Image 1 (cartoon, rainbow, N blue to C red):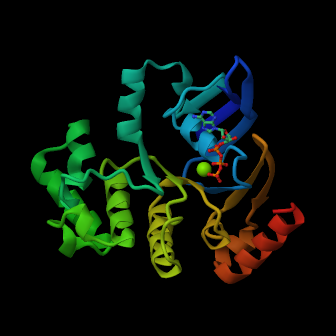
Image 2: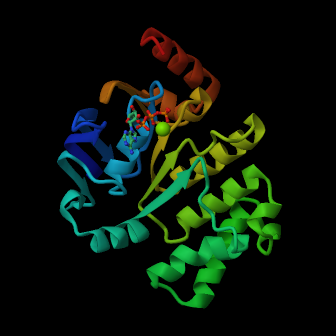
Length: 254
Ligand SMILES: Nc1ncnc2c1ncn2[C@@H]1O[C@H](COP(=O)(O)OP(=O)(O)OP(=O)(O)O)[C@@H](O)[C@H]1O
Ligand SMILES: [Mg+2]
């Protein structure tokens, strides 16, 4: 069963004087329920554009995108926003947290917007998430009073507050030092363990090595993909995975 499916997904940007630049070229992509997929590839190859179009944040030029059996590429904006709020979580490199709200309020805001649960259970869920990501003590802090890694943990909590089916990340560890990045990746791996589907854009082979499948984008197409074997999945030797992935990427000229 696929949770997310793109077929013939194309995206063009107009580059002035009526000229069009094709940034995604008839992408075919199927993501299974519970899968962890990473997207790699050179700068400008269309990774972020793939993430934004496949999640319905940005419109598409051709093709279709189906999320949980619904064609989102034809939904009206309001309905799409609702679907995203309930079914999808997003973590970005720039965290998009609101500066005039403290950490807790930033985290619970999407839950109020979704209006699905009572105040008490929202607060409880937020407390659980903050505990799980190690920022329970920072709930009252302004977002200007915490580190980048702590802010990213808050962004993860916010992405998870509505218990999404799928979590999207665009270089969620890109702005962090390697220790903080490692900790964030552990949290993301845990989220995957609990059954959440994950689609992550990253430049970091350490991050991508955690995924079950790595897509390599080149000039708007998925040029190749690397899947973990059953043995690799089971033995969970991240170092060996990363070495193999690095060799695969080098082979591709990355
Ligand atoms: N809003 C936009 N308008 C016009 N062109 C755009 C827009 N957004 C992206 N592009 C172009 O689309 C192409 C793909 O961009 P995209 O951001 O998807 O690349 P990327 O693979 O994420 O790169 P990076 O690794 O640097 O983040 C680039 O050539 C970029 O200049
Ligand atoms: Mg990008």
